[in-house]
Length: 191
Image (cartoon, rainbow, N blue to C red; front, side, top):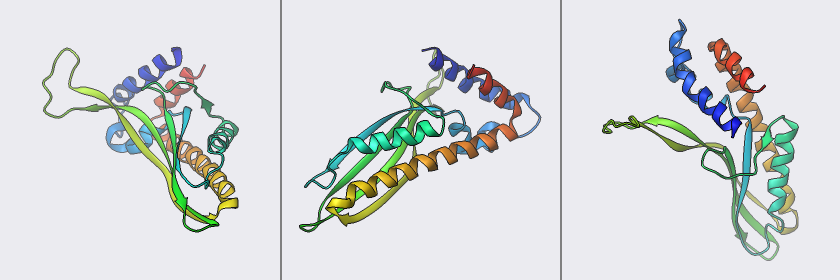
């Protein structure tokens, strides 16, 4: 809970910090990087929509993602509450012959973000709300013999975890260079 409150304080203080500096504004200059930079712990969910024995162990996909994220210094959350950053691994597929399968694999990061609601009637809560934002880490269509499909999917999930690490690292470099005071606030929240 303490971590959740810290994240809220950071999210709401970003705009004030960005405006106080003489330079770029976080909203316009930060883009998606401003949303990714502070992500550091995730829950992982697998949506297994594969038939015909083409994905014998969907739990391995979650395990491979968790191992790769932990190796890169990210935390793993057990909860699935709205304000938890979620990684959703979706596998949809079926067999196309006696020995071959086709599977579409997609991996998304879903997290809450605060947005302004145009034309909203301003009330005590203001004219903004939290909505889930989906950041696509990657997707791929894989075709393979059934006996090796699990291995191909495991490898792809691990590559997507590495891509997420790289995307977040680059976002931090970008945002913390443009807004040095955010780096101090972020590092302070990690203590």
